[in-house]
Image (cartoon, rainbow, N blue to C red; front, top):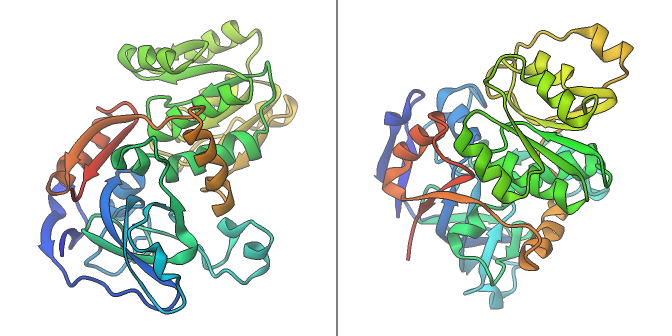
Length: 343
């Protein structure tokens, strides 16, 4: 099968086309013919060695996959062959207390497609039967691939961790990213007033088109003061993954008694925290990673009903994966960049 392989750590140039053996599904597994795979900043971090630095190489990236079931292994119903599907990117043991309580993303053996195991930068991929969901009929394969990881991540952050309520101000950092554009929509779904923060006027305009009630450019000095002015004292809830460069201003943009959910650190992990703001103003800081596999069913129901929508900013061919990584690092795409794998 055709694939794009990461044979070493480094820049986008380490992603090279290759021919690999087509995988065979094992017990309780299916093989999916990949039609599209969306790119994530996680792919960039793995490529650079920031995430999973001891990962064996060569490796195939790609967490967000849509396609068609091509073959099934023992123990899987044969009638699945030919089904159009979306893959849940989270893998877990399925039998520990966390998994059985619906918190599989807290499983000690939790893995993510494309990060810890081979992913979707290839024509075929094998996954557990439990990771299949029907592709919404109203989406193209490219649109469907743009849903799983970012909407799972944003759903847990906004709905489960922050528990946003109608009328609250939700500050969405990096609203032009995949996670940000999903968090913006989920905030509106729950009745929040969304203040979208991004680094360019073009992205802010796109955020307003998505439904943002107000916008702010976080590259402007003192932007947190504008947030406090717009919201009348700060945002009650904040969805953030921008990292060290913006962390202190994020805290200052948060209202007394507010909540901040963090799902990443794009500009660096080593942030300085002004603790006086945290304890004196009683701000809650909540860590968040991915979401339970069960949440993707709920997300896809909203997508199929038109209440949530993936944002695809650029479609490239599989062979253009390196260019896709460049676009991510240049922050040149609003929403998701997607690789079209097969027709």
